[in-house]
Each structure stands twice: as C-alpha cells, then as structure tokens.
Image 1 (cartoon, rainbow, N blue to C red):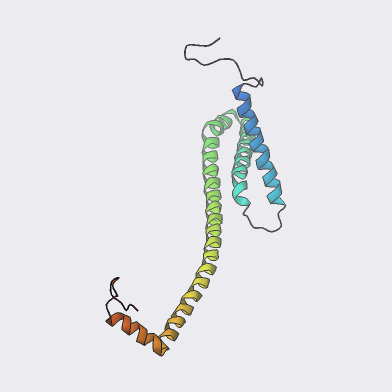
Image 2: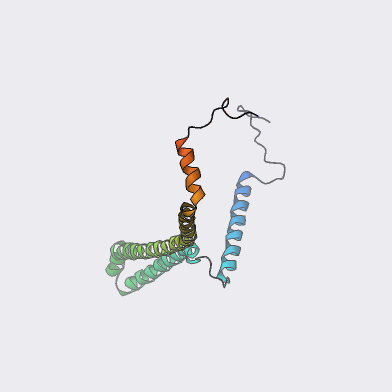
Length: 175
C-alpha cells in the first residue's frame, strides 16, 4: 500500500528496517576503530601520535570515575549525617564535579594542543628539507649565470641581438 506522498511504507527487501542499518553501520565503524586502535597500540615505529585518538576515551573514563567517586562520597556523607548527605548531594557534589571536570577538560585540551603542535612541527621539518634542496638549485643557477657572463662570444651575440631590430618575415637574404 502506498501513502499520499508516494512512498512505500514497507521495509526493504532484506528485512532490516532503516534503524537496524544505522545500528549496523555504527557497529562496523566501532569495530574498525577498535581494530585500528589495537594496530596502532602495537606499532613500534611510532610514526603516528596515538594519544590524539585515545584522549576522548580517557575523558569519558575519567568522568565516569569522578561520578562514581562522588556517589561514594555522597553515600558516606549520608551515613555520617542526613544533613551532611543532603548538602553534599545538592551543593558539594555538583561543585566538586564541575571543578574537577573543568580541570580535566583543560588538561586534556592542553595535551591535544601540544601533540597537534608537534605534528605540525614534523610537517614543517619535512618542508625544511625541501627548501634546503631548492636553495641549492638557486646557488647552482647563480653559478651558471656567472659562468655564462665570462664566455666572450655570448656577449657578442647578446649585444648584437639588443642592437639589431628583430628581422621581419619579408626581409632577409634570398639566394
């Protein structure tokens, strides 16, 4: 049956609804990321900075650990006194979480910036080698110009070309 907009509401022929395809795609991407992570973990060449890929996971694990630690402290505060538990639950816990989460985020962002700067410096070092090679070409061209200025007939030919107008198509010697 077709609705008013002309679209068929039946699921695709393979039996998977669109949501299942999206979930499968996410699982494939997650599996690929995990395989790449393990491959880079045991890469002994150290040609890529793995920490850049790990920092989001570290942030998630650290936030989870903070929440669990604050829940433990909240339970401890309730065991000591009901008023202390209520205070810690509504004032102390959220403030501590906000403070430590902000501190953690700033620290991890600083690490990201340092590693990205390092990656850019590596790229610039590669450009430096290219510039050094090209500067050697400029020196050899200058040497060639100096050598050609010393050749006597070169001056005669170059001065002759400057003094004479360019020949026209009709002018010239015909035999």
